[in-house]
Image 1: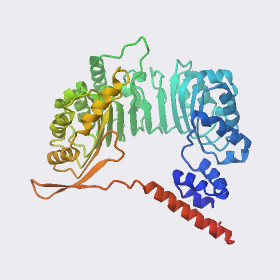
Image 2: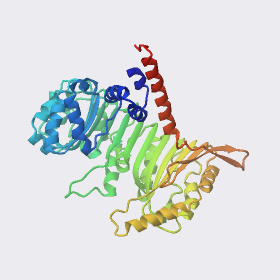
Image 3: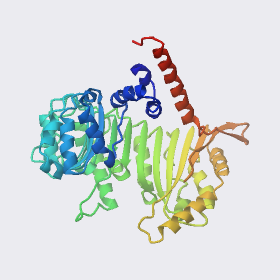
Image 4: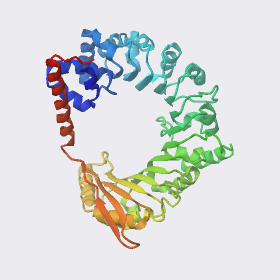
Length: 468
């Protein structure tokens, strides 16, 4: 029975558990052990922990736990729950520093988890507290995601050195690194804030010699600090260019995140994937430089575009000659009655002379939450985009890119994408064949199939068969 349930995806498992008591009981154990995430919203945290504490036999099945401890009473119950999670491998906590002051036993419960391989902390926890956890833990921790808040009394590289032979994924913000110290030789994926490394790419690459996936998160500045002006990023780039970074980290495959941080890193080597968040048209030249540096094969762009700047789209990707797969999200932030015409006129020219095989375009609308007439502006933008002739746009883009084989377009407020396979009948004629949308009832068909499988199994069991 347990093996049969292990074959079901989470959604189908939940539906199956509603059919009878036997499947409900067996499904609980499977849900705790197999599923990658337990969604614990605030109003579900206490009932879940009470259920676990009242049924301690289930703790041996619990592998993954995501939990929000937003009140001292929840923190106390959380400490009791974690103290019995001897099989827990993945822990994600949303918590604040004051909870530890009110419930000191929570520290001990976290540090005592013997099989923990992944720890994610969200909220506001002091850097020194996380450092004490790291130094006290005796578990095979491989993944650490923690935003460090405040100054750390110990040297950060010394603290992390205790995990040097284990850590493989590191998400660490808020610690300044005047020097890297000992290397972390096994870390292959890292999410960093470049300002923490004083914009020194050499320091970062020396510290993480085996890095394959690198994420630059957007720097956060205090209330009294002003983000660097554009010329500051140019200055940092020149400094990094002088450090002769070519040839370092030859295994690097993916770079993503904050455009200006990636630009100022001056990292020059061919990568498989490049993702750029929140690209504005004033940064077009820096994006071109980054494309020359990294020569990606897959490019993922998020562009914030005022409609009056649509005419600047042609030429934006002129240095993307290596890219064969492009995903681009275009976020419009101002309403205009001519938006559809501007998009059809200028967007196809952006793809001219590229060697793309597939393109995915998603149009989105910026959340105008600070505007007094935000709802009206949103409706006007949505109305302008609804006027867009999507098949015509797809055909014009295909005409600009002779190598293109597939195009997908996602419109706001639409549940399904519009996608076409592209065939070329001759030099001048195109055939765009719509790709069928996924069936709206496909999910329920899978659920019905899962139910039939489990009912057959129950019938098999009731007739005296034994499943090993």
